[in-house]
Every structure is written in structure tokens, then in C-alpha cells.
Length: 107
Image 1 (cartoon, rainbow, N blue to C red):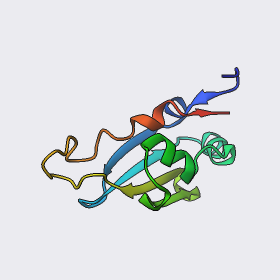
Image 2 (cartoon, rainbow, N blue to C red):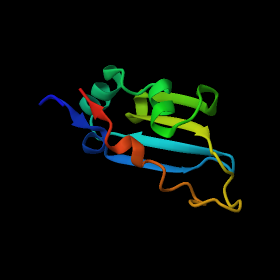
Image 3 (cartoon, rainbow, N blue to C red):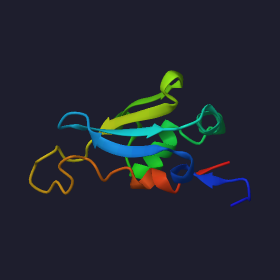
């Protein structure tokens, strides 16, 4: 880690996950300044491939990865490995799934 790297957790104002219906999960990352948002967006760190690595999923399981300039944030929507509320589901609301993003280092 170089001195200029910083974690996504430190840059983001909001870093959360939630259900997007019973079969999808959405990750929302919002920033409180254009500078922080642009740093993350331009870094090239947030990619479908990186999401697949972090969540141990296939590319086809990432339904959307969208940067919203007007909102200073990005959203990832992906398939849940088990539908919300199904036997064996450990996070019925999908609210604890953002953790893998937290330690992602941004140059």
C-alpha cells in the first residue's frame, strides 16, 4: 500500500447494501464531494471483474454496475446466492453485504 492509497470506506459517505427484490442485492456507495467521487471513478478499481473477485461470483451474476455523476455515487446490482427469506438465508434484508467493499484500496 502506498501512502497515497486510501480505503473506499474512508472515502465514502455512505456504503450500504440492501435487497433489490428477493433475488438481487444492491450495493450503494455515495460520496460527499465530487473530488472523492471522481477519484474512485477514475481509479479503475471498481469493475465487474473486481466485484466478481470480492463476492466470489461470475460475471453474469453482476446485473448492473453504474456510476451516477449527479448523485456522486455508484451502484452495483447482483444476483443473491440464495433468495431472501429462504431456509439458509443469513441476511434476509441484504443489509450486511457491503463489507467486502470496505477495505478496497483506491489509489
